[in-house]
Every structure is written in C-alpha cells, then in structure tokens.
Length: 214
Ligand SMILES: [Zn+2]
Image (tube, rainbow, N blue to C red; front, side):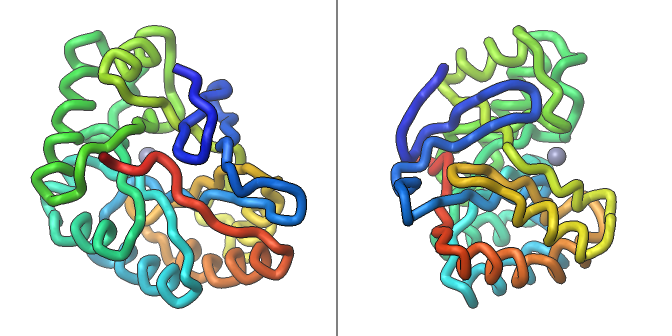
C-alpha cells in the first residue's frame, strides 16, 4: 500500500523510506524522528523529556512485550502527543516467519498497545528492516502500512555520540531518522538527541510525527 500525505507511511525498499510530509515545502523542510525497540523504563522517559524541552513530536515503534511490561510508558508517550506504532510483539525476524506467526506478532503488539491506551497503530516497522513479499502482504492485509526509514545512524551499535549526531543530521527534507529508545544501553542516543534537534531546527527543519494511531 503506497500512501502519500502527511500521515502516510511510504515503503521504499528494505532500508529506504521517505515520509511524504506535507510541510516539506521549500523553506519549510520537515523530518520525522522515530524511536524503535521501546518502551524502556530507563531511556524512554529521558527521551520524552528532551522532546518536550524542544517542543518536538516523534513516533515510537514499540515492541509489544515491552509495552505489556510497562503500559504506563506507552500511555505517557501518547499523553505527550507522540505517535505509537507497531514493531512486533517480540522483535523476531519477520522474513523468517510464516503467515500465522507474522499475524500473531502484529496482532499481539497491536493488542498490547491498545490495552495500554495507545490506540490502534496504523504502521508496522519490521525488526531489522527484514521484509519480503509475505511480510509486506500480511502488513497490508491488516490494513496497516509498512514504515521504514531513510537515515540510519546505527545508534544501537553505540558508535559514539558525535557519530550519531553527524549521521542523523545528514537527513534530507522529508526524511525519516531511525533511533532507538530501548534494546540496550541508549545513553549515546540520549546524549546525541539535543544536538540533533538543535542542528536541524537551526537549519529550518520542523519535526513531524508519522503513522498516527487511530
Ligand atoms: Zn527494532
């Protein structure tokens, strides 16, 4: 399903995605910050505090079992005006799963998000970006869009705060930046986030959330 518009998720290949942001007009470039693998009791609150400080909205691709463990964090994300989307229930490689297992991963994550008060997610981001025709088809069959990214700073590898800043700020208008608020030590991501936001804001970028839940 290819959608275009401010709220659309536009799949463009295994690790390439550009969000069709309506605000991405000349002089008003827009970019989307996305955070995967949370929520996490240590890192998610720190990231939320930074986003609030700068008045920036973002999108969180959450792991269902982590939502089930800390539904209060998902509720907090939504209360602060961010978007919550589906990053499967237990973060498997979907390309290695059959139809029934893919469906279970999607459905259980959606149920966990709904139970937490996060609404109904409209997008799935396959863990690791691993997808194939079957994965694409099952996501579409759920009436959901598949959302990838355009810039991967590889923050989960902990390359250093400076590297994360440099890579993230190489984004171009309409881009989608992939970062992580869970799945390991995210101290470098937290440390890099203010500089990423300040850099992009100083260059005229606005931040938009994508994949809003229903
Ligand atoms: Zn992930």
